[in-house]
Amino acid sequence: MTLIELLTTARTLCRADGIRIVQYLVADLAREEGVTPLEEGTAYPIWTPLQSFEAAATMLEALGKQNAET
Amino acid sequence: MAQAAVFPFIVTDPAFGEASRLPYMPITIQLQGQSLSVSALLDTGSAVNVLPYEVGLQLGAIWERQQFVSPATWRRNRRRVLTVLGTVGTLPSARLAFAWTRAPAVPVILGQVNFFMEFDVCFYRSRSLFEIKTEAAAQG
Image 1: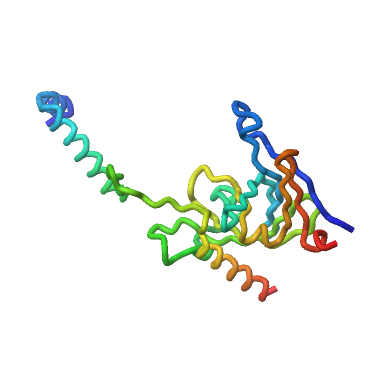
Image 2: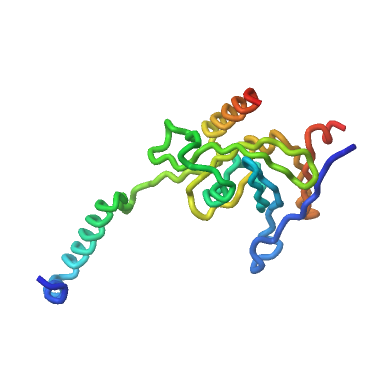
């Protein structure tokens, strides 16, 4: 089936099925690329240096090691 | 001899003028002979110094050779530890540890570990100025 035929067929679908096709294609491409699709209503953590105390402790440790070597 | 450097708060968005002033200042960072002057944001709320990925590359750092910042808590670890030599104006240089990040659109951030452990900073926001001193100068 050519792209033109596919689009012609897709246009005969109801609006909801059209949206489902788009969602399916996006999810499929994202999976192939290793990109996790964002889902509505889901919280995603974003790293911030605010209160990043574990990172701070790791960096102090690295500094201590470097200072000990020099 | 007291050693201090004074900098103005910088207007970061001309559309908002005074409301957009932030404490940015020039700092020279060095790594293995490579030297780079960058504009850095002093952020007392940041637990760590943060270095953008591109700046680390310009210093000649190799991402794969650096230690993870927090291996236990982040699934896709996009931060590594990078220690450099930092110089502010004519103040004595200090070794600074940065969280070197691959996150896009991040400024150079100077935070508690360890910029504020090495330098004493006084903010005079009413005058749009801030002053940096070394520990020795602050005691004197």
